[in-house]
Image (cartoon, rainbow, N blue to C red; front, side, top):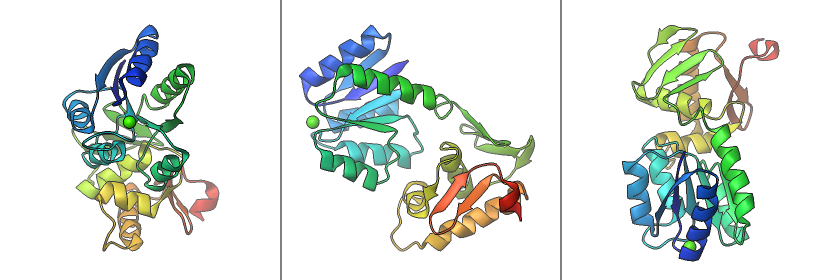
Length: 226
Ligand code: CA
């Protein structure tokens, strides 16, 4: 298990590294945003521990750039202040978890284990949820073993939902993360693409509409079919 720690405060990054190495993790460290992003893009990690306040490029920018390039390595943010937590959640960056400084190394290790366990499937090459399979490398999709041809945007949209099974994802989050921007795009854009995906997958397409909120990747219930 490889973990990248991007943290400019050396005592903190050293402490994190010591605790994670003790648990058998292979720990790499970066001390500023630029080198952290470069490292995250050039190597494959099982998890990234990302400080929010970093020189050159802050943690939220790194996360955004990784997600925009379809890198779904799980991220745990470290924040110095409670108001940064609001910012992280408000930005809908797709963070997997966060810890607020000062945190106990034991707590962080527990979070790391939980996130790695939860996202084992997300970091793999394929997603397989509710009868739909996506190969993230070849970008091929199938439904109950039958190939489905999706456009690039449809594929990314399905991948985003499938990586978070059962979670209700707001339209704005989808616009931000799948399209990479939301300015000038209405939430109707999302609805149109979802409708196309449903047509391609058929009546048992595992997409649940949560009226007024967004969508969730879930097996259709009897109720939603009526
Ligand atoms: Ca910092």
